[in-house]
Length: 482
Image (cartoon, rainbow, N blue to C red):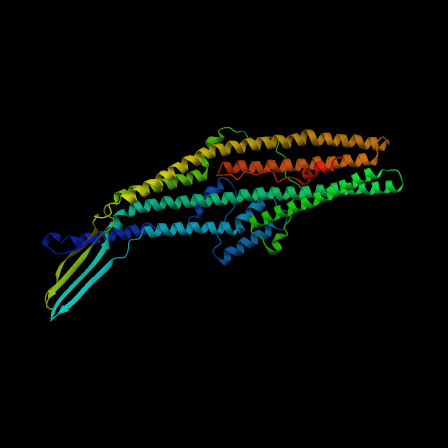
């Protein structure tokens, strides 16, 4: 329920216009404090991401920006892509990231709008009866908005900072997903190459078996076994090529490429396993200090705390308009009675308890979400590091133990074959097993690089843990064994 009063001007009220003038200049000053930045807030995002990845980001807003991004992308695509090249291309071209940048524009617009007073309100009443007039005129300002503006600006600044953290998180998440997709694509390509070697060896073995059967020197059962091995190997190649297509297209989507740009090339093999691994000293505390999702939630919680305080402060009155007014009653030539008008809300039906309860519930909800995220963050970083170490140990075991053993066995079998101590079939089977071992090492190496990416992400924000994609060789290992 609103109460509107027009009070005649008295000598004690002469200062009202001066107060309004003062409030007007204050409002102009506050309006000037909230203005659009030159970079739309992207500079803070770039500064945050530079602490984790040394890559450029660009908000494409014009044809010039698009041409610049296109030129740099084409330059990177001229040579086989490194993982850093793939990440940079994704940061330039991914349209989902460009859409996330516009969250900055939306949030900054809310901030600037909060720093602006509502427009003044002009009201007029004009009636006439047999030459008698009643004319009322008022020009009022929403003084309550002016009084609450500093608090509202503080809230919106926190929300804008939160949006900047969230946008930085999107940049780093895209970079992380691109790294993982890159390693999957390179591993899939390398695995396909080795599976083709398996198929070639199996095809030679099957052909030799057919010739031996024709000559009467081989049993048909043994020929069927070799033919089955070749059929399984061919199926393994098909599965490897299927995985390669999936991995390549995932990387292509993340990099935002289309048309001729999709004909990019990748290196022939994954990066070598590092000589050492990172230690886990204070890894949980590091995550607590630098995870952007926690920073974003803290800013949101601060904003909600301020919002709760503002809601409590305005639970009884949230409308207060003041301004000069004048009234004429009588003949048109009679003088106006000058005064001012005050409009405010009387809390008869709504005491604001529901609004306060809602604000309190939202605030406590945010507190618990922040606490849950902190607990989960500690668990996620521990899990990431343990998987990182485990995958490193597995890949290292393949590199230092299993692969060298297979090579020694292969060398010994070659000598035995040269001495006519074993048959060509045994030599082919050994070659197939060696390729299978190398292919398993490729997968172990891929899993290590994926787990390293997960660990890096766990120190920044919530990771999406990688799971083994499986292997065409492993899918067929049992059926291909003799």
